[in-house]
Image (cartoon, rainbow, N blue to C red; front, side, top):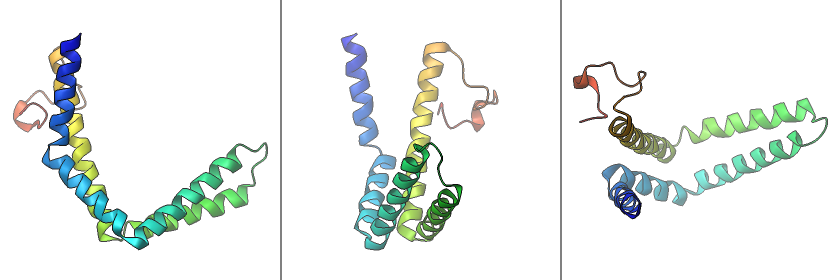
Length: 130
């Protein structure tokens, strides 16, 4: 069992050394230094917390929920227009793609099967095994 954890740790370290992870962290750092983005993210978290509080009430006010939801949509739209946030979203997607590929390889090694949704049977089109 110790060998499994040792190899898992090595895999984790390899992921941290990957280009995809490095790029994602770089984009996160840049986005966090963007004052406008940080302010908007704070506003988004405040709205989300307010919605969560309201949802715990017996009879939440539908109008207030819609208003908060609309405000969150507006903030999200403004964030998605910022270059730093767009780059961060893309970098996170690339890192998640790497994690998904690792999971597919592990699944194949353990079970001998690939998810039918992810594999068309022709390995030339699959990025997961290469």
